[in-house]
Image 1 (cartoon, rainbow, N blue to C red):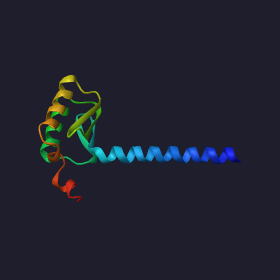
Image 2: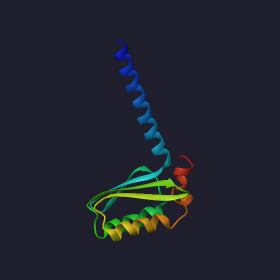
Image 3: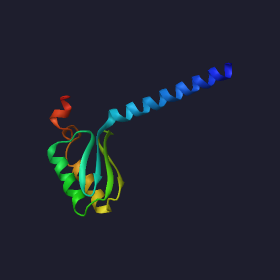
Image 4: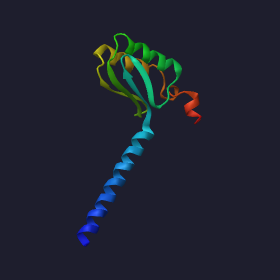
Length: 115
């Protein structure tokens, strides 16, 4: 019986650590965008309309078949993580677009007010 209690306790602790990891990661995430056939969809968070449109332009020509753009806060600036079928030129353009505005200017006013 003690082994079962220990196993359950370890399982609960592991679940707690995983939950903490996901909550912390969400707290630093500005937004997550999914890309399919050159079209961008906001999955989490929000961006200013200008930045969102610039990113849509980047992934439209040539069309990115499938990908994800994750923008997070880190070291006082925005960091970009890409996965999918981005060309090197597109990856650099995405980093340039995101880096062209201060960290506080990335999220739309609606999102920063909690609306």
